[in-house]
Amino acid sequence: MSGTLFIVTAPSGAGKTTLVRGLLERDPQVQLSISYATREPRPG
Image (cartoon, rainbow, N blue to C red; front, side):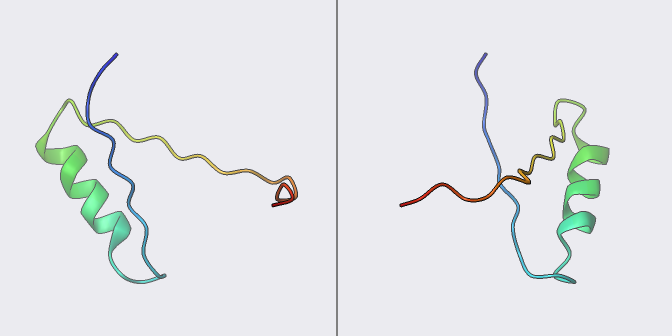
């Protein structure tokens, strides 16, 4: 699988959701994946 990965990160209230919603509406090939970890950070 190939493609382009965009990581959207910004402070709260900066418009991340608005930006992503706009991209999803305009391009059917854009997919959203939300990922996070709840474990403690690894040392180092």
